[in-house]
Length: 206
Picture (spheres, one colour):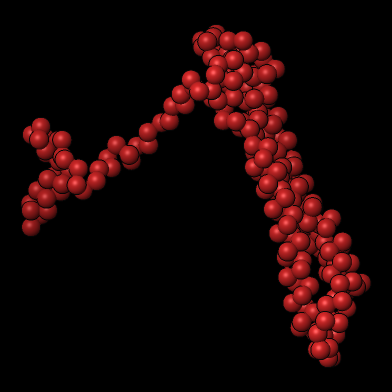
């Protein structure tokens, strides 16, 4: 058991270092977003008053940060800390349950501590505990996900969300996308299509 805790020291230190860096990343982003939100609110108050009608600066800053902050950094760091805290507990629980598990088998020297069955049991037991920590963090991250920025701003203005239309920018590639079976509008209008241009170029090169 002492050797197990000795092997756990360095990975635990690395995990805690990474989680600390992620927390600093999250806090720094929130500090930067606070300034951005204040500037955004001032600009909207001058040029787009309808978009912040009935919304005070504090409420706008809160919803702006909530919609843009890197929440993943907070929850990944929490998952790492949870894994570090639960690993010693899992080690005690797994080693305590091993004799109970061995008692249900035929026994034999290959079930002693340190042999392959014990090693596989401990390895997959730790993986299950770490996966559970990640699962809990992911569930909380999903359950506490904030509304999209535009929807949250509309709710703050007191507008019914059923009447809110969230505009989505059409990607540049979507303009050129056309199924093979669709009629070619450019061809009917007399303008050369991309296929015609390609064919003429290829014929000229031949």
